[in-house]
Amino acid sequence: MSLQPPRLEIRNLRRTYAGRAVVDDVSLAIQPGQVTCLLGPSGCGKSTTLRMIAGVEMQDSGTIHVDGKLICDTIFRIPPEQREIGLMFQDFALFPHLSVADNVAFGLKGSKPEKRARVEELLARVDMLRFIDGFPHQLSGGEQQRVALARALAPRPRIMLMDEPFSGLDNRLRDGIRDETLSILKEEDTAVLLVTHEPDEAMRMADEIALMRDGRIVQQGAPYNVYTRPLDRASVAFFSDANVLRAEVSGALALTPFGRFLAPGVPDGTSVDIVFRPQHLRIDFDRAGKGPAPTPTEGTAARAVVDRARFMGNESLVEFCMDYDGSILKATVPSVFLPQKGAVMWLTIRRDRCFVFPVEE
Image 1 (tube, rainbow, N blue to C red):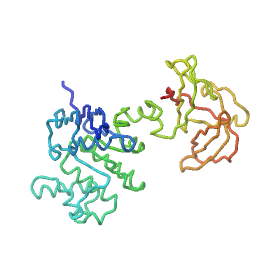
Image 2 (cartoon, rainbow, N blue to C red):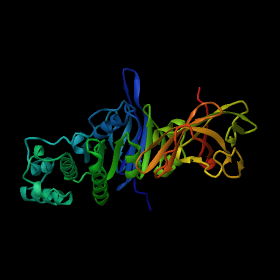
Image 3 (cartoon, one colour):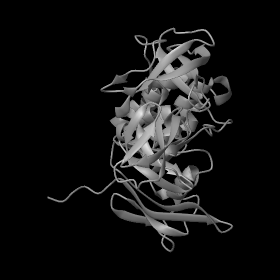
Image 4 (tube, helix red, strand yellow):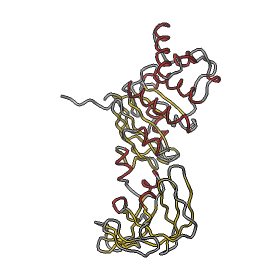
């Protein structure tokens, strides 16, 4: 029994501008019904990758395949309109002079009744049927987004490319529309490649995240794995604030004011960064003000002074000035916790949530 080929597969895509590799040896495979997020900072090559897949920009090298069939290399090229690929962008790109119905029907083939039936079906699914005879300027941003989704789905594309499609929406609407969009795309068994620079959006929507940096995919996997097994310090910091302790390795151990941390395989004398997120810096309320004491699971407590505390809604963010070197470490605490500036406390670290990386020169 043969395995089903990926719905979309790109192999070793490369694109250069003025001698600089904007996309550098990028490979991805996406199955039907799978959502993959291409996640990374602005300028890392995400949108250029999307444009090459869509066919509006040519790669310098590499190949693009749909259902196992080559659709583009540096010689052979299927035109964009024949690739069965849907596109959704941040600006929605609706035609202002066309009605909602005509916008959705724009890319459809078939008889007038067949096209009308498809338009009505999709507008009903996105709860926009009542606006079928309206025009884009009469709609809110969220309503325009729903029409753009219906139009992109109308030709039944096998693949949907989405470039920051929700960033123009306010927070009140964004989560609901994202969830609705994802549900419809999965029902249609569409392979989705979503470009975003927002880690929260990628974690919420993706079956798989491809973390991109400087034109390359540096890490790829399920959201949980990418978040909990970061490749390097920059990968940790991209998803959230990160605290960093600098230490030197001796005997496969890094000595810090919080105790020793394992650094297996790291040569003696190597400088390492011990990286951990604010939620894993713990305030030791039992020992606050009583001095450090060793604990079997969290090492040694280190003395710190509160520098600032802010309530963030679901949690409080407390910044500490550490006694041992004056550095600032951040801790998040559930609910309301607003200690006074200058208050002395003792801190420990969740050792099982720390990452040790050799310092990059």
